Image (cartoon, rainbow, N blue to C red; front, side, top):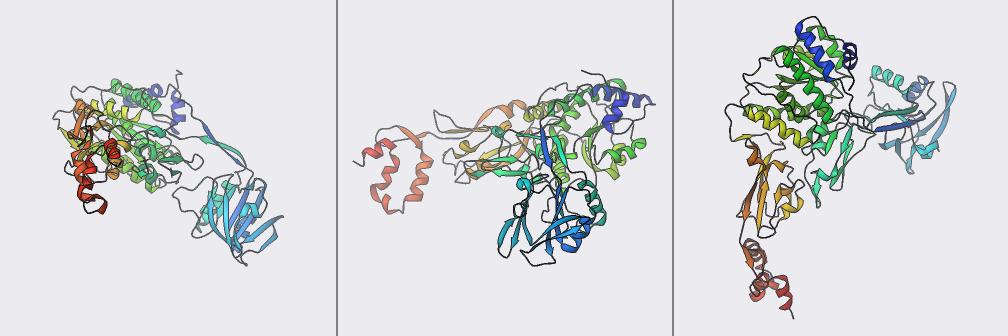
Amino acid sequence: MSVISVEQVGSFLGFNLPGESSQQKARLRALTIALQSDAAPTSLVSYNSSGIVALVGPLPSALAVAEELPDVPGCLILATQGGESGDTETREVAGRSVPIIYGQPKTVTGFLGKFSIVVARDDGEVDLAKALDLSGGYLDVVLDLSREPMLANEILPPGYFAPRGDNEALDQACQEIAELTGQFEKPRYVLYDPDICAHGSRGITGCRRCLEVCPADAIVTNGEKIEVAPHLCHGMGSCAAACPTGALAYAYPGRTDTLDSIRRAITTYRQETGIGPELLFFDGAKGGPEVAASVAQLPDHVIPWKIEEAGSTGPEIWLSAIAYGASSVTVMTTAKTPVSVVSSITDQIGQVNAFLFGLGWNESLVDLVISQKLIGRLSDISTEALPNAKYATFGGMDEKRAVLRAAIDHLIGQAADLPTEIAMPSGSPFGEIQVDDEKCTMCMGCVAVCPTGAILDNKDRPCLSFIEWNCVQCSLCAQACPEQAIELIPRLLTDSNARMERRVLNEEAPFECLDCKKPFTTLSMIRKMEEKLSGHRMFAGEGLRRLKLCEDCRIKGMF
């Protein structure tokens, strides 16, 4: 474990913190201790670009921009106006030949070094790169000059630029494009474990949280699981924060490294000052400069913590920070933070504060604030330590649900007046299911689709049971139930044993075959079949009796 200096703390944060008062010195020591170990490495994602740029838009605009890109290795134009669809020509622009094809883009897919544009022409569709016989068969960079770009993602794929008529954005795009030749690498930000994914089962779709919050559209359904496109992923992290099971996890830094580091920071500061620090999460690229501009106003008890993106931490990290002794947690966003990420963070914070309010805290210990309102938020939080408070020491865990349970149980243990249960907002990954025993036929379809082992059967008798902590409220069971007998109730039980115990939801005595007396189904299932088939001609008269025979006796009766 390497010891780092105050200068290295400044390098990590992107700005220097003052170190004059006792609290400022304690904050610096807390950060030097917290950052002693390096984060475990993750794998890399590579891009290879030969620098061929496709300009898409009206011909006059595209020609003007081509004049501004004299240093790129190659340039071509898909002209959406200015000629007949299907025509091609070549023009000299800035001392080089630029091929031009006329037509309308139908689809664009890919990323830096591997874009494909399908062009709709009067004579059919054609792949632009292949039509121009480009080496490798792909385009490297796309500069979309349309007022309404082909792609409308909140975050565009690497190598795709859409200035939307903004001259300043166009100039910035041209500057970046000039540097996009060669090989580039980035971390693989998100890891996926399909074994604990609650997206789907047996053709039924359940949890869609990650799909709904990804601003780059880098996650797609792949049958009953999902697939993350690493070249499209920008590491915003909202997918991992929203994932109820931990199937998606932020990889760099990983959960273990983050927990251990912030625990050391909070513990060191609290031991040296006697007060709980405020923890400020900000993303280095967009938020760093804004925090740096306000560093002189930053209260001494605030520990700024740089993260990759605003959405890359989640409830398990925030609750752990409070359990370690932080007086509050603030996640800062900027005007550049995607709306979907802000919405996701807001939902997650709502869930966390619902839990904390249920335990008796009367203020938002976890909050989201835009950079312009940062100082006001940080100045309003009380830093007084709780009398006789005990602080958590857990760490070194990477499983999301295990971390959540450790933090939740610790905070419940500190509550004075403990309710039996805490109502949680819709969408929370905690809760129970209620089964209407008048409707339930014990078909066990819910057991078959449950991805987390929350709903269980019994091989000895018709019995449906439930372990509440395992339930992530994915809704697969409710959607699989043919009788619509299941209702989801988001809540959190404060008794850890009650959360973990196996309890019966519904049970029946088995129905015995009329001939051999072998138990083979339930009475409710027989009644349901009688109800549905009583009017069918094949089950008229004695036909209904066959429903009450086991499979063996039913076959015997046919011969």
